[in-house]
Amino acid sequence: MGEAKVVITFETTTQAMAWERACKEHGLPGRLIPMPVVISANCGLAWLASPEDRDVLLRWAEELALRYDQIVEMEMG
Amino acid sequence: MIYLDQAATSFPKPEGVAQAVACALSNVGSSGRGGHELSLAASRLVFQARLAAAEFFGCSDPSRFAFTANATESLNTALFGLLEPGDHVITTAQEHNSVLRPLFRLARRGVELSIVPVDGRGVVDLAGMRRALRPATRAVVVTHGSNLTGNVLDLDWIMAFCREHGLLLIVDAAQTAGWYPYHLDEQPIDILCFTGHKALYGPQGVGGLYVRPGLEVRPLKVGGSGIHTFSREHPQEMPEALEAGTLNTPGIAGLLAGISYVQRQGLEAIRRKEAELTSFFYQEVREIPGVVVYGDFTASERLPIVAVNIREVDSSVVSACLAERGICTRSGGHCAPLLHEALGTREQGAVRFSFGHLNTQEELAAALQALRTLAREDGGKGYGRGQGRDHL
Image 1 (tube, rainbow over the protein chains, first blue to last red):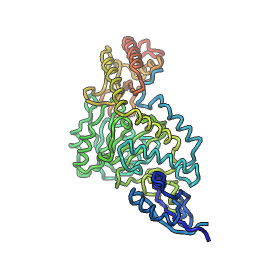
Image 2 (image 1 turned 90 degrees about the vertical axis):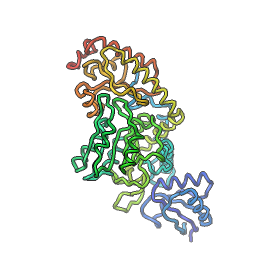
Image 3 (image 1 turned 180 degrees about the vertical axis):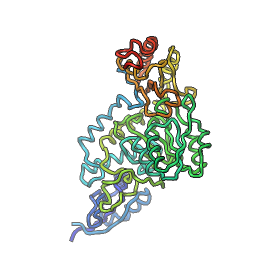
Image 4 (image 1 turned 45 degrees about the horizontal axis):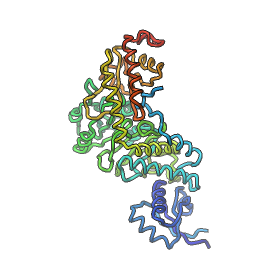
């Protein structure tokens, strides 16, 4: 069994960059990773965080009007 | 050397631009092409440049800025990506070929074109836009500032005209980006096309375009995007929709340094210095016997450009003679064929002096002195190797 994670995906690299910048500015947890193929084989970037950080990330996303594509909870080895 | 060809490309570049390009070459990978450190460093750098461009042009959404190779690519993207057969477009006779040639090609494909004339000083007859209006009119495409005369269009009038008639406004800001204070969040400009290597002080080979939120532009190029690999269609989301292929990250790094430089100097300070230089040069050059000056110098604002001729002398002869004296100017047609025809200089061309805020009055005085000497030598006799317009 892997560790439970939250993966937030983006439509564009620019969205991922805006997300990362906002998270750094506001001290929010997580980091950019290559898009996990199990979510999408379409390349791109995703934000990896712990499940317990999901709510705070989404609150800030709404507050800062940050754009993203999907939020996926998954086990990662 | 005295460099007075700033409208072609700014020179020298400010300190920091070359270093930024070199730093990117040495320290970053390919933007949007993976999650490793070098790729992320490139993506972050490009995003930082997008933020800087958005802030500089008064836009709150950096995703509306796509990077291109230059203003020509931006204009081709906008024009071919928006206009359809049956659309009618209004443009002006002061346009550069980067606007005219795409429009002429589109005209062969069924786009209707009206070209608003200019007067003998190269001033666009804005009322001609009203006369050109048709039910099928879809867009107005204008060069904000002429690269030949330095004349600047009344953008407020054109924006109001486009808004009144529901027309798209596409602005060629090749000469005005880095000179005019755009506020795109407030201004009804649908597309703004710019290059990085003129008044933004970046390197050659990088430019961009702003696309107003809600407006979709069909990409000129499709291909690698770093996202949506298995889709047969290129991504539609801005800015990646208009950025097929690997970006010129080192160039974008240089553009970022150039924009930062302009912001540190302040647009107003740059404009003031350039206006002083232009006024000084104009007041002196118009007094030289035999010199003809083109453009409207009664306008409240103009670009730092003064185009002249010496009587009937081939402009290339004059420019070559100036070059022999270490003075860099641009002769010929300046890719502005209709404007030259209107000025009556199709055959002769014109000698364009264009200034930047880093030029000095002493440099301009030396150029003026050289021009006085050439003008005294009457029609090119004794100019360097040449014997006038027929013998260069």
